[in-house]
Image (cartoon, rainbow, N blue to C red; front, side, top):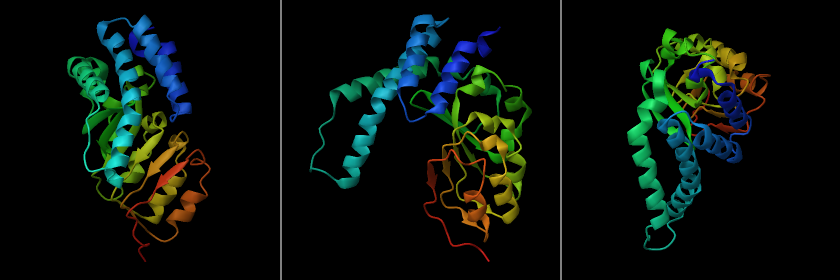
Length: 235
């Protein structure tokens, strides 16, 4: 078995995606990588997961403080500053190692969220041979969420045929216009059965699309649906 498909790591990543809001499975994976990582990059990735899990509630608190404009001054948290600096140093040094073969895919951009990957991909590219070649590997299993963007008309139906989407638990399809046929394809897409979060922010819907999504047997795991900036159905 190659390093790109270790059963232990795949099992840890599956456990994370089974309960993505829980930090404990992430921290367990971080501990395992620090103890058993085969390289400095892998051991650093374990530390990176811990750092991001510690930073996440601090960043949420800061955003809430800014939203509510609590107080007139903001005192920088020296602990957060140190954690952020260490996180950035690790990312700068090892990011290419962590991404590995994903660097050869047509992803538009990426980020790390609590240790796992968030990708931005132009809709048609999610079906590329470079992504498909990584099915079953650790490289793909590290992807937790995908943002699909910049699609030509009807590209959504084609991209939903990609088995790559089975890896994600969070999917964003922003600022789109979803036809009845696309709504049906979204509702009947078995590749989306693992989703717990779906964002359709800024999306316009043809009449009948939202009931299709609500009745979908494949979208039953979703616990958060973002419909911010939704416009009225197009007649």
